[in-house]
Each structure stands twice: as C-alpha cells, then as structure tokens.
Amino acid sequence: MSVFVIAEAGVNHNGSLEIAKKLVDKAKESGADCIKFQTFISKNLASKSAKKANYQTSEDASESQLEMLEKLELSFSSFKELRRYCDSKGIMFLSTGFDSDSVDFLQELGMEIWKVPSGEMTNLPYLVKVASFKKPIILSTGMGTIEDVQASMDVLLEHGAQDITILHCTTEYPTPYNEVNLRAMDTMHKKFNVPIGYSDHTEGIEIPVAAVALGATIIEKHFTLDRSMEGPDHRASLEPDELKAMIQGIRHIEVAIGTGDKVPSISERKNMSVARKSIVAKRKIQNGEKFSDENLTVKRPGNGISPMKWFEVIGKKAIRNFEEDELIEQ
Image 1 (cartoon, rainbow, N blue to C red):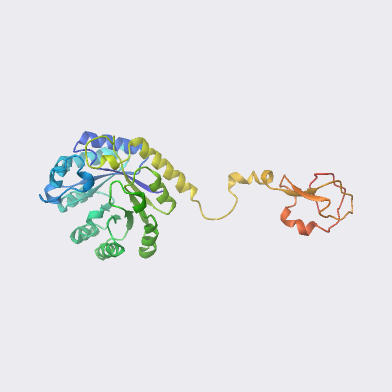
Image 2: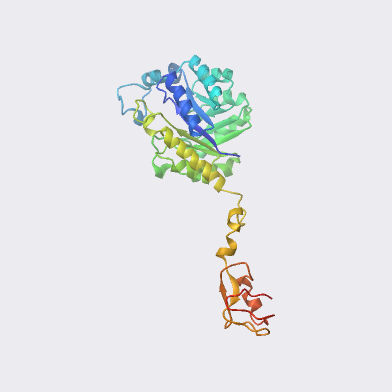
C-alpha cells in the first residue's frame, strides 16, 4: 500500500477561496493524495484573551490570536465549493474541524477521513464526537506524552473508532532537527499496534522522506504558493516545486524498501557472471594432473565453478587438458 501524502494547505489561503483553489491545483500537480485545510469559526476556537504562538508574532505582535484567525477564516459555503473543486480535480478533500459546529459541518459535507489535530488530542468532547462517526481517524500527537496518546486512544476506541493511524509530530514551526525524534514512531507502533505516520514541520524535505524509510504510512506536510506571503504558516511551508520533490522522494523510498528478502534482484542477475569469478587454469594443465594452488587461480567471468568450491576442487584430477585462463570443469 502506498504512503498516503497529505498536502497541508491549512490556512495558507489567507482567507481567499481563489488562493485555496490554486493550492488545490498545486497539490494535485505535485502528486499528493490529499489536500487538507482547517475549518473553524474564529470566535468558537479562541477567546479574546488567547495569545498567538511565538512563531506567529513576527508579523504583528500586538494582534490577538482571535484577530489573526478572523483574517484566515473561510466560510462553510467556501468549503462546500472547495470540496466540489477537489472532486473535479481528482484529489481527496480533507479539513480539520477546530470547533464543534465546524466538525458537524464537515460531517455533513461527507469527509471520508477525520484528522484530529495535535491541539485537540486532549479535548475529550471533541474526541468523543469524532469517534462516533465511525470513520477512519488520523490522530496527530504533537506536544503529547505517551500517556496523552494512550488517553486519546482509549477515548476514541471506547466511543466507536476502529481504524486509527497515529501521527508523530513536533508542534513547533519550524521544528529544530534535534527535536524531531523519529524513533518515537516505532515506540508508538509497538505500544498501540496501529499504523504510524508523521506530520512534519521541519524545513526542507529530508525528514519526511526519512520517516517513510522508518515505516511511516502517512506523511503530512505544510505547503504554500509562496513562502514570502503574509500569514503565520507560510515561512514553515514548502513551495509547490519542493512539495513535488518531496513526494517524488517518498515514492522512490517506498518502492526501495522492498520485501526484506535478501536475494539477487531481477536487474542485477545479469551482472552476476560479469562481476563474480570462477576457478580457472593458471597455466596449461594436462589431463590427469592434480589441481593445486600452483595450477589454479580465480578470475572473471563467474559462469564456471564458484571459488567457494575451491577446496572441493583442489586435489582432484583434471578430466582433460586445460589451456591457461580456461574455466575448470569436473
């Protein structure tokens, strides 16, 4: 099964349906399986006193989180149009609901998969509602301990969720490389025995590709049309050509992982006789002469007796005359 790649548009549309559609186009062109947005009603998501994260304050430190969100909010009617547009382009539409009304709307919109964002993994009413839909769930675990993940999983499973994939994540934009901790994927896979993926906030494309090599079945990565655009998430996002390169790298890695069986590949079998060696005559050998270190050596090609049988050949008698460099026969 191929790695499921989510192109996270998030709020990088800056509140514009037109930009959102352009993001859909670029996600499709890049080869992503899915494009994900964020659906919320600003006043239901953040209180007036909620502050912005440090990475969000670089543009306007005096602005509250609510004021920032209001500029990034798309209407429900816009999301209906986006869903239709994604369907017409042949890419899966996905959006994370950040409040109860938005979750209800997305359920009515018919989303096939539910994505629980890291900030909601400790929101019990939210988890109960999403689990009740009995659809596949992707659970992001940024800022969480293993105990937090256990508690979230317990709630989801208790209330009807059956198909859950856990995403390892570090909620910092951009994430320092020394705080990625990809090995946590294996820890959670062993503990919870469910598929594991990775939601990436690092700069560049190397870490998601590495996550695939370590077993990630889902990759989520923020992208934007242009990193220089105003908005909180653009600077930590890939541009379309980088997203395409990341997805190409993922596709290469997933086929390169292979079956795990150590056997010659189809393409390398033709090279075996060229690269390996055989037992050959070091000099002319007469019929009946005993084979020894003095009259035998090892040279290419490898389509004769393998040098691994050297000690089985030494001491045997030649069955005919052999010229120098001729493959030995028995």
